[in-house]
Length: 382
Image (cartoon, rainbow, N blue to C red; front, side, top):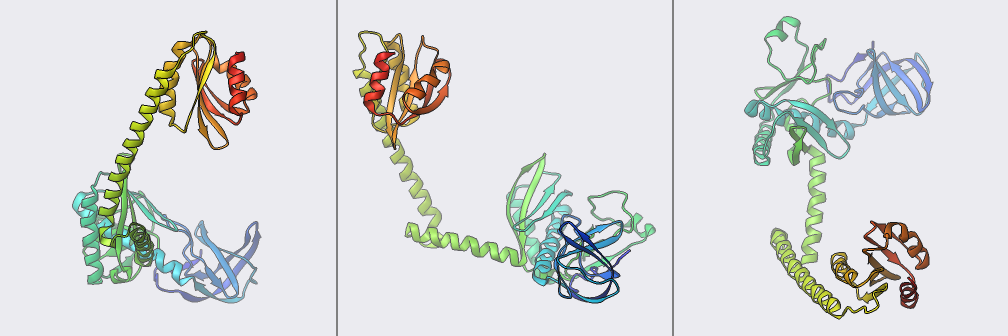
């Protein structure tokens, strides 16, 4: 068993003795007599850092023994200095302690449990076993940040069996032994194995980013502390750039976007009306006295407009009717027929016209690179 020192989450440096060092596929697994490196668990990744001059790439635990995956070996019996990667550990503790903090308010007000937790590199997710609105989450966020300002104490304890029987606490697991309790005084009591900050003031800030329905409950995305600041700066930079592009003040960006969307919708409607008029004109001009296969050519039109023309033109032929719309490097097409099985015919069509596409027996669509004369000659021959 390794003596674990990470009950003090703010212990970033320690002295230890190497018990063993074994070569493994990805490096060297080093076991110490004691360690402040937290092994992966409870939704949080294992710590990284240094053991003297060996770089610790990951930390895992198996049967009570903590294994430090390092990039170089250390001699058994050697005394080493362990240094936790302070920035990585601090950010993880800010996010994890922040998750406990906001969950304390969610649980107290709505009774929901956190049934899933993941602390990733770019965001934190917590899965609630109940439905909560975004406005309700923001109210819990506000309460969490008020608790940050009050710098409430966070403590670690290992209650005995008798005390646990009377203690009300949150836990995602049942029938645990040596239960480790993280308490945010007056706000939350939760069973958790991970390192935590010593007070809520060190969390810095708690921010709800998004929420969505998930497995009958709610998945909540949050960030806390330095990670929340980084995300805020990234979003502010995006707003600043949008503000520049729209020639609008940052606080007027939403109004500018709404105006742009309205103008875009009006323009799309005008284009749709123009396309419909083009289709009407083409349909009115369609003639095919011989009832053989034939094709028409148009400027760039959308697929729905081309399909409308094809549905009318196919009525004039016992063979195939094709609509070819100019596109970069050739034509996009829709070919329709009431008598020719086009699914089987498509391979021949595409081979003859240097194209690709497919569909049903009644209609196929795709694109070709053949020129207009080649297309017209093919339709006349079929």
